[in-house]
Amino acid sequence: MRVKYVGMAAILGLLLAAGAARAQDLHVAAAANLQKVFTQAIIPAFEKQQKTKVVVTFGSTKLLAKQVEQGLPADVFVSADTSTVDSLVKSGVLVAGTQATYAVGRLVIWSRADAPNHPTKIQDLSDPKYAKIAIANPDLAPYGAAAKLSLTNTYTTVTGRLVQAENIGQALQYAQSGNADVALTALSLVIDDKKNPYVIVPDWLHSPIAQSAALVKKNNIHPKARAFLAFLVSPAAKPIWKKYGYLTPSVVKVKK
Image (cartoon, rainbow, N blue to C red; front, side, top):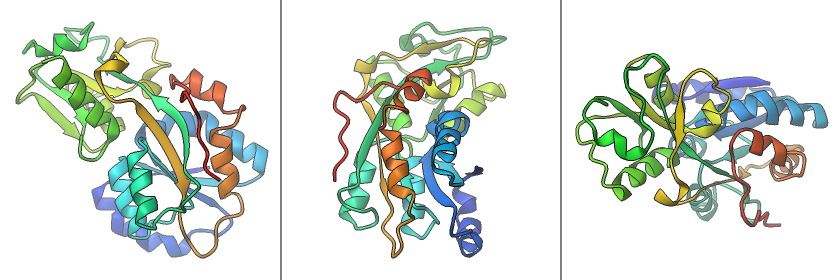
């Protein structure tokens, strides 16, 4: 498995590298919340099962979508929402009929153990003692949009104190480094953190973070691309999603 992390400045370099990518590798573009579950569990299990090497690029959903449109080498697009996948299917970037909803993500408020204050609920963030609150850019990341909606629905006033990151992983890094007091981030990125406190944001405060994936339309579909999509919603993957804090969609739907 090879891992890439993508940001705004990396678009050109990745596009230039496309020609050098080995054809036999399966290339996956995946939302940043999937960093741990993919690198630690999903991809190793798939590689073992299929005897295929996976190269994964992580980034915010909307940025990755734009890059896939511009030619980012990818066989499968794995989103942190369903609307981006549906949009890319309609525009012809992704293959119609291959959409698969594989998991539902959860949002948490995370803080360092040595921080002076630790919120126990999202409303606590109205207190100005939380001077810098890191969230993923709501225009780029579904978890950022969920964070913004949760703050709005609880009338939690944070005007002027939000620090916007490009993606959910970067938002967590801001709090980990002390550049923010807390971070609204993905449960999957911190669920195994036994040292630093976090609190789950109630799911009813935002729209469900249902996450889906689909094949990227290209002349030659990778022979293992459909197998990767199938693995995401397979019985073998369900306990992995659960271990990393994801909920199972009430109806897992794979269009054929």
